Image (cartoon, rainbow, N blue to C red; front, side, top):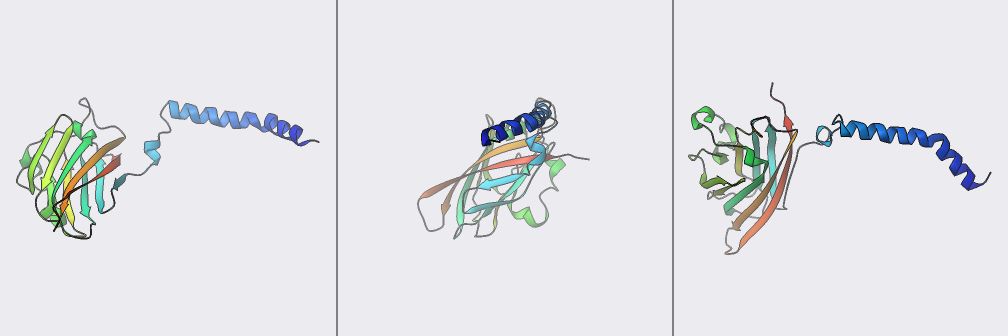
Length: 192
């Protein structure tokens, strides 16, 4: 038997099984039974010199902590958020006054609540920015941000949220402003 004939017989014999599996996977993806958002974990990627932790999204909130991994102290830090944060709104401060407690209290900002460390904060046209004047030493939190009352067209958030970050900062002892960027891709954790 020649090599070409063997290959052709293999495809004829097993090709239908391969096509059947591909069609089944395509149908599952088309009807959203199989979605990448269900399989992929939440991620937070920022430029070298920064880190993030405590990142999560629920049906109504988005939150994360930005860390300083630079060689020295940085300040001020201006962070601009774009993406699905446009579906989050301000809220009644008194309802959430206990959210910024514990280890992240010093660096916590709830968008819409001005008594925390954000010296300049605004949300406009699908973009939110905060400026943190407090110096952030190496390995310490720059800010812990919480976006509240998030929804899309009056409905709860979709399966995954995406937020882009733009970070502008000065390193202590320098007069040059630096910039960095990042991206959050968070799987929605369902509330009980």
